[in-house]
Amino acid sequence: MLSLRVAARAVGVGLPLAVIVAVVLARGRFPGRFVVNALVHLPLMLPPVVTGWLLLLVFGVEGPVGAWLAARFGVRLAFTEAGAALACGVMIFPLMVRAISLSVEAVDPRLEQAARTLGAHWIDRFLTITLPLAGPGVLAAAVMGYTASLGEFGAVITFAANIPGQTQTLPLAIFSALETPGGEVVAGRLALVSVCLALGGLVLAECLSPRRLK
Amino acid sequence: MLRVSLEHRFAGASLCVAFEAPTPGVIALFGPSGAGKSSVMNAMAGLLRPDRFRMELDGVALERRHPEYRGIGYVFQDGRLFPHMSVRDNLRYGLRRGGVGPVGFGEAVELLGIGTLLGRRPRHLSGGERQRVAIGRALLSNPRLLLMDEPLSALDQARRDEILPYLARLRSVLSIPIVYASHSLDEVTRLADTLVLMQAGRVVAAGLLTEMAARVDLPLALRDDAGGVLRGVVNSHMPERGLTAISCGADFIWVPQIAAPPGAVVRLRVPAREVILAVENPRGISVTNILPAHVVAMAEDAAGHAALVSLELGGGPLLARVTIDAAERLRLAPGRQVLALIKAMSVDLSE
View 1: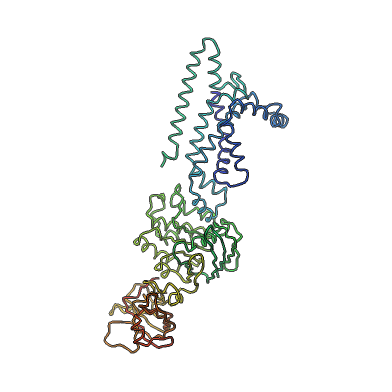
View 2: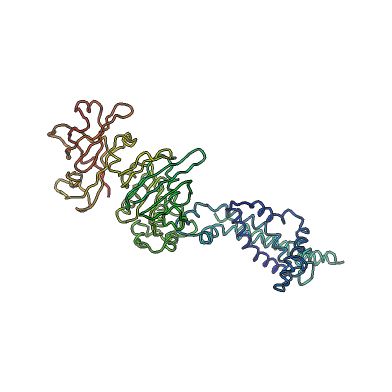
């Protein structure tokens, strides 16, 4: 249950951001585009443990953003459920951005031009033309991100630790069970759950992919 | 008045175009593919930003406005209907954003004959239906100017003939100026009031269609389908002879009987190769229309076989194409008085 909640928060916060970044990357031509692109894709390339540690540096109680959040709002991210969601969100962000970018690029820009001549400004065009047409891709990205969130290990254990009931997501629980003598049965059961979730996610993502809908 | 002037350099091509035309009315940009018609249209809509650009419509400068605030309806060659919306929602897209214009939803739907299509998705429409919806969508956005970029070029001849009457009706019902790009002389002569002749990114000539169509110094006159265009008003019907009299200035031109009521404005197209010239009144001849005219200008075609003769009739200028031999026998020269013989069956009428 905790895993599902963490993944939901990761996707819920990450998806709108991913949509914005994907549109900017797919449509925008601006200086620094490469830097944004690299930054977004960094977690995909780095070992997850490094990502988690970097998060700890930035968002930890001592980190610049973490300290500010704690002082200003009394919010602590490191070693909390919210922190686990943040770690998952950062890890799945590049996946979602890539998937959404592809579907946004598939939207015919000439339709956006047509909307423009009909008096639609850019937010209007985005909400009425681009987003609905890229919609299936966005949904597929969300499902994929959600499924991937459920499996995130390295970044979560580094940034949020492995606290049962607070930050112990499914893969962490499996890890703990395996560390415990005689925990194979529990681990096996959890692994089965995780396989089912992953398969379900993949099937759902496939059903939602733009290719299938056409 | 619509005034447009622009300069733009593309990779490997340049565009340098300026024209002005009275409004309202249909302004045709006519020229072969690649002449720069679409680029001019895109610049007018604001989708292309030329290096230098000025555009003024009825005293309002538009070149600095963003496309969404320019108030220009654009009918694209490929329709560009929104695939995820019904026909009704496509039509309403502009209506919601452009404010209420002179044309209401019901009126546009009726004018274009798309009432039965409203619930359908664009992918279930035929090419002709799609273009009619696209025209309606642009019309309902309350445009101050309507651009149509080869709206019929993706359609076969039957579909074109289906839409042309709708376009002719639009022209006579609306007071919105229309800029119409086309490479079809047939469409242009049926719709345009002003003709802007384009070639390789330049304006070759511009002016009133009726005058341009009769000029012998333009490439238009060399075409096989060249012909003069006259404006007329339906004068009276003669059912017993199966004829209708159209008054063109001081002349009457008889055509096979039509349905339009007396007083209706029509345009008559007379193919140049169908005009017979005579220097004395022929007798015992089937030709219905024998009209006095004088020769304004003459030219030979490139092959040197045909003489192009620009005529001035009581009702306007006309173009005739005869053999060089005939021109010499009749001693045709500028200023010469002749009779133009026009078969009633050769006159092509449109609204």
